[in-house]
Length: 187
Image (cartoon, rainbow, N blue to C red):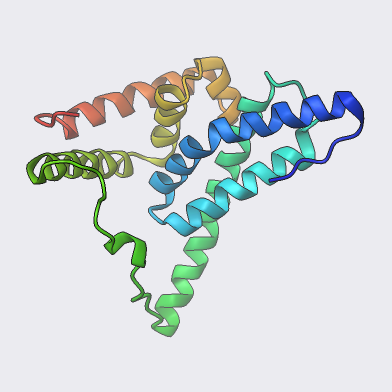
């Protein structure tokens, strides 16, 4: 993504913003995949959030970008859920079906792992994904912002547009639910 800039100061801000986006893109994508269960939609969500950050908030300080970006991500994910509800209703109404399989999903793993270890890793990751998807959307997003993004309670509350008490409650419930669901796994 190319970020417009004006002058030397704008060039530094542009480079800093681009570095921020590069540093956040993989984790943001993973968060969106977990929230949506769909790689293409997750990519669209991350791209939309990045575009909105660049177009509306490039003039903010680098310290302001993480909470702003995650707030935009949360809003975009909620919008995706609203659109999906309508789209799924139409699919059901007209009996539309998605039978396409992503060809990338069928490619073999090129890492040099033993078959047993590959199976164990895949099962652990699938268990974690299922457990995360089993959380409510708020618990899921609070957990990802706190545990994966390393945000504190205040930053998470700002990003999600809720109180700090709500963040603490959702995080505690998410941790407990994940512990219960992942008991016995080596994650």
